[in-house]
Length: 415
Image (cartoon, helix red, strand yellow):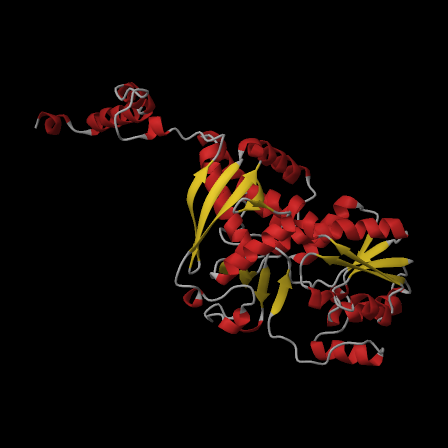
């Protein structure tokens, strides 16, 4: 018997691992277990019968919360507005979902008077860090229990045997070789054959997107409207966040958009190969960047690019609830005040291209940019600008020439 706790709130998916964790917590910590499940768009099939299953596994109470709208408004869209992409490819779908889940799990624990929370993350992954840092930031008095770092179950067979011995209702079907995480923003695939970085993913593995080769032979065009950096309409028809992203997932998926294959550097030190499907998110990043290109001045846009890299690291590392991430988010939010307008998007066989953009706040001036005759830009002014802008280069070159002259022997200088 471990040190007992009174009541534990468990992040519960209903899979084999978390189903086994319910009786394991009761047995090892002599506690009451309350399960918490966040609906972040993983699909109805994963939520069906979840409450009954949790109770049958030994839970005293269950919570299931629809957090899809909050996931997009408060986590996905701000990350997209920052332009944050981890290691140039990963759009952070799992990363920003974890602090959202932890936030509400902590709230349930506080409401229920629980003294601990628990999760089913393994000791090798990033998610354990994201969950626990979020809990630490929101309520450091809560104890965190991570069974995978404590128990002596080492395989699926061990877990199945434990479940059978304790009368836990679990499926006996063979385990999918891939480890997946799905929410409204994306679907990730890890493990199985993907552990060999030379292996090309099998087409049957993908669930949200068709192969680009099998996508329609004709491109599709549509418009996306943004208000202060937030996507609000497709082809002029306004939608809430959940409906809008669901539609973009359908459009992008049908045209093979949003597939990424990456060997990434995990926070815990190892490299890991993952394949991600993010059709709607890929479209939003593309369109939003195109709109920013005409709405933001050069210095702000370039500064945002610097912020984007750091922002992505903070999200990936589980540092969502930190002063730095919040300060960077405040900067990003301020830059979005005039990112309002429309982008015309083209999807074709795996590619997403912004082919048009317009905004009432556009800084693009055709009368300034034209190669034709104009009356607003005096081209002769450029000579003085170039002389001043290049002055450091000129001075440096003069110093180099003088130094080289001094180092040359006198007889060679005469020659």
